[in-house]
Every structure is written in structure tokens, then in C-alpha cells.
Length: 252
Image (cartoon, rainbow, N blue to C red; front, side, top):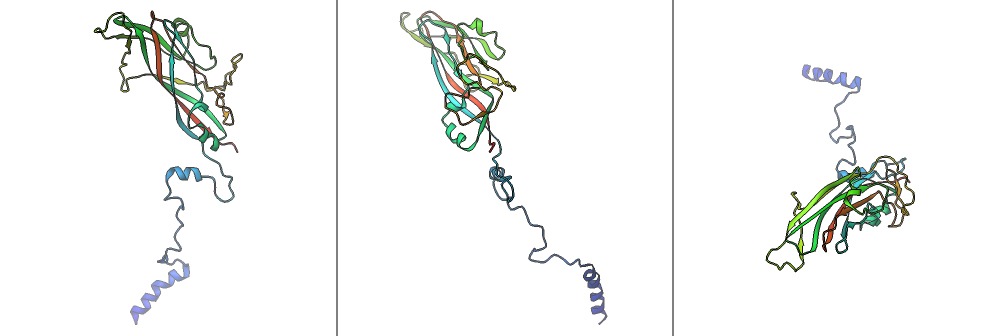
């Protein structure tokens, strides 16, 4: 009888205070985050799309690549222009369908240079690759290109051709860069502030956000401008890939 009284006394304080143990079914427990089990990327997309909130995509920063292949005339300087233009990439349409604006922050040029048609045993050609945020005019010499603030070079592409081939026979020479990929790599950064360009004839938006609702010939964030000296009757060929680090955002 006494044991029953003591058991009741122990329960009374809890009854008075209203502090009972949590129910076995967990109804008094705090509700867990309903998105806890979702993948991280999906949770980022769903963030801000709950009840009473206006849905909005988070900014996306990604790499976009485009290939290029440029050759000089026989015995002429290789002076050409490669547009830093995300709208020229294969995947552009997919991104433009989701986002309203884009901006290029930086990039890298992965390239190799070949000397074709060389009849000498040793090929010796000098060059430079420049990033120009405004002007799309090609350089006519290595010397004039060296004044640029963002450049790769000057470099020298010296190569040895096949000595077993007759001296009058055209040969191909391609130096192998000392790198993991076997290609030269030129990294550049776009200016953070807006740039004003006149007399260009193209839409340059360096340092600014640009609408994705544009033609694939617009929305340039500068230009890659190689310049490689001429060498006899040699045709200089520059091949590679341009990587652009692009950020997209939605304003609607």
C-alpha cells in the first residue's frame, strides 16, 4: 500500500507542472527539415520557393568552352581575333532559357602552335597571346602586341623537323610545352568595372551584366589576340580551346 502511495506522489509533481514524457509516437518532437534528405543542388534551387515567397533561381557560375583553329597565310604574320563570347558555345541556348543575365569573370586559353610547310631543319618562330577587353583589331606584329597588360609571352616556338626528309620538302614542326597537358595555357581576368568602347562595331559589355536575350554574335567580354611572326614560307597554325568562367543570374 505504501509503495503505491509513493508511486503516486512521484507522478503528482509532473501532473501539476504538465511536464509529461514525450509520447512514444513522437508527436511532441520538433518537426525535422522536410528537405534534409534532398540532394544539395536541388535544395539550392528550391530555396526561397516556399509558401508566400517569390520563386527565384540562385546564381550559377560555370565554365563554358569553345574550340578555335586559326592559320596565317604563307610567310605571313598570324594576327587574328578570338571573341570571348559565351553565346557562341553549344550549350548557350539551355542556359539562356533559364536565366536572364550573364557575366564573364575570367578565362583561360589552352593552345598549341604548329609551323607547317617549313623546309629548314630547325623552326624558329616568336609570338605572344593577348587579352584585350575592348578592341577587336588584330595585331600586325609581336612587338606591337607586347604593350598589352594581360599577355602570354613573348614566347619562342623552336622545333626540329625530320632530318631524313629532303631539304626541299615541306615539314611540320610543333614544340611540346612543358606542362601536364602538352599545351600552352594563358589565364586572363575580365575587368571588374564597365568599359566603354567606340568604333568597334560589336557589342562589348566587359565588366557589366548582359541580357541572355541576344544574338550569338553579341555579348563580347573582350578578345583573345595572338600574334606570331612570319618565318619564310611557313604557315603558322594555332589550335586550342577557350574556357570562359561565366556567371548567370535571374532577375524576374
